[in-house]
Image 1 (cartoon, helix red, strand yellow):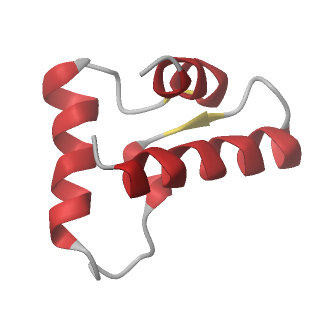
Image 2 (image 1 turned 90 degrees about the vertical axis):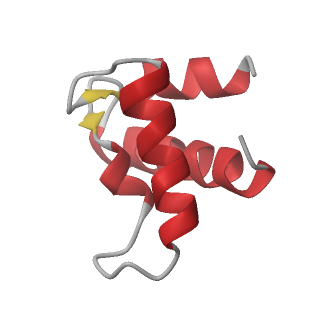
Image 3 (image 1 turned 45 degrees about the horizontal axis):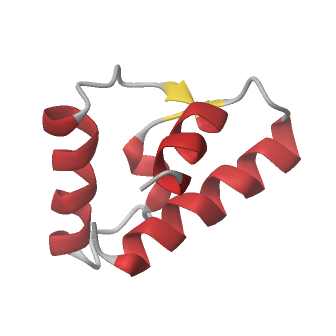
Length: 71
């Protein structure tokens, strides 16, 4: 995983947890704006989320943060 994707995931998870609490769920789309301005990074995130970990569409932000921090 590229360091900038890892940092983006951690930043979004921390922000969502701070805003909505520890039970908040998110999808990999949460790491990107509504326009496709970085398709390579989007595909890396999608591959990591769907193919590597076989996550559901929504997962708990705390779970994702824990996994990314351990990488």
